[in-house]
Image (cartoon, rainbow, N blue to C red):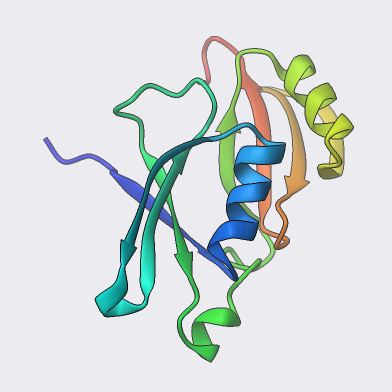
Length: 135
């Protein structure tokens, strides 16, 4: 059955992206494999606590000026990725303490509790604890 395996996230630099996603958000490094014939690396990460078969994020270093234009704006200013948690208050407090820039404060919506943050490049993410009906 088809499933979503990876989502590509365009980054400026592999190591600075890993420092943010692993160091600040607590993501797990899944793979970091050199691909010298293409001058790049195959780097995948997954959110903390995600199952082994969960969709991963492929950190894709921009290889051209055109690709670089989309670093931090892959969704045209809208929220790009939705990170579900089972404990919103815990993660919000930890990430705020780690210096994560929340650009919309926590709010209770019909689908759950949510706040919007920006990653190191400016991509917008929802941190969301879904209600039982919405997840």
